[in-house]
Image 1 (cartoon, rainbow, N blue to C red):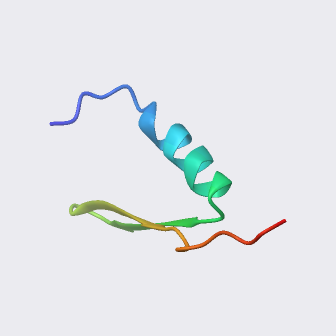
Image 2 (tube, rainbow, N blue to C red):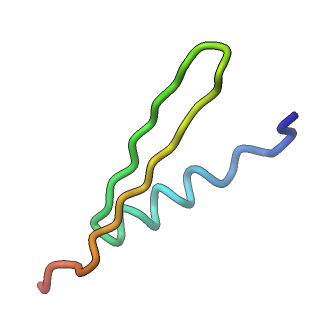
Length: 46
């Protein structure tokens, strides 16, 4: 299972931060890892 290079998470993190979003991680032993990405519908105007 798996076999990826692990390059995706840093790109996702950067994109989510650019959109003022958040990423949370939940890990359970012998079950795996769950990532949740939350992005606001509108970004604050600067």
